[in-house]
Length: 395
Image 1 (cartoon, one colour):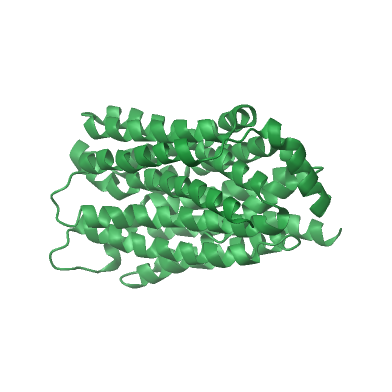
Image 2 (cartoon, helix red, strand yellow):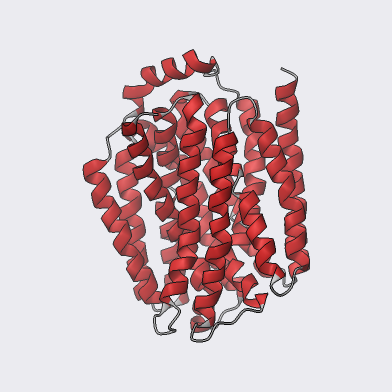
């Protein structure tokens, strides 16, 4: 991988980190929002779902736009839109106003994955793509862990409100938008299509696409996305019962610091997975990862006290390993000409249908039933991925 390509990947990956900061700002403050507006987990769970569904549904449309107008313009719109919605959420005076701000933020955030992933896939070869997506995933995990860590620092004193927190998040969004406007190289898929097709075809002869396998892969993405959304949205609340207390640190600050510790384990998982996500073993790797989620979710269902932190740390480590494998398989199954749309459609079904996870977890009051149910979902995902792995072995 050339230095120029690596620098491009790092810049795009910063936008990946930030989209997850925007995503996980809500779980960091959902208890504070619920307390201010006197609503319970049913309503705050729906708030999480209304952010995630457009995050997914909008991705297929933005994937279509990326194929026509290139990644740079769309990435700038994503950053400007999310920053604006953070400001609007900060001044909203009713729960309905927050609801609308989250809905619109999810729409703007839906732009990132089809734009960013397509750009990376076109700039890399099959041999370097796993490593590139590993770096991309690491930055995503940094954003995922950084959101609650930042919230833990901000809310430690108990003096900062969730509104001020959201307004502050607009600053890095606008700063990165300006950096990308001047430093990100404009790409247009139509212009680069022939070069990309020659590179991929010469390396693997696999640019014909395999839509049947892609469809099966999407099922694993939906099931994994359902687990992800349910796990992430109520993670700080789950860690409230871990039995930790620190003098001088508020409950909101402590639970978000614990969540950051848990999600930092996902960074390790992404790093390890990126090294192993190589052509020829992608399906089997994804299968093992999905099956490995199930026992850890069962542990979460029955864990109490300090064991809650250990269970969630291990789940984060394993769960986030799936992304380099999953995203590399999309690049393998979808032709280069339709890759933006392929990533967009994947994000649509994974984040929209998977986005029902917070509602599921919010309506079920028992941790045993919530995480036990998610363990069943993980096992189903492993079975579906096994179909892909066995079909690969028969080739």
